Length: 137
Image (cartoon, rainbow, N blue to C red; front, side, top):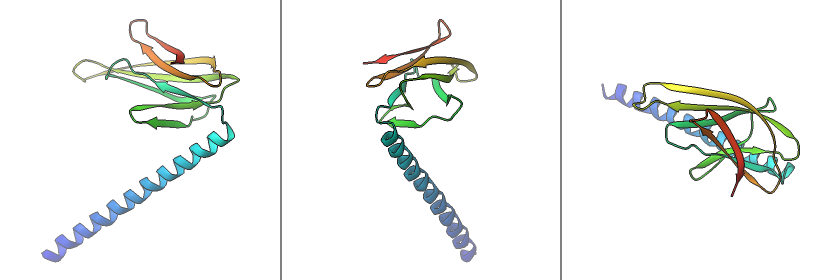
């Protein structure tokens, strides 16, 4: 039965290498897309997701009906926005309950104009149940 164990190990190794290859290709494509976007829009601004606690998950899945380009710098992540026009942002915040058994999902649509040369922060205020978008220092 040594050959059967060896065969299973070989198949698992091939599947793992294929998965790693696909992951690396996706990362290279994402980096290329980000470089092209920043060449096309050199004045693009960053919108940072700023969760107030660990139970909040913020997301902007659509900007003007299209999927936005995301970024991640160390622990900070967010999306790029093109300044100069009013942008329609679809916003989602998932708030986990203490104990982790359930989540509350809040959604909103916000129309804002962003200025170049500034970065912005996006927060969800749990007490008011509203999203806050403001220039980040």
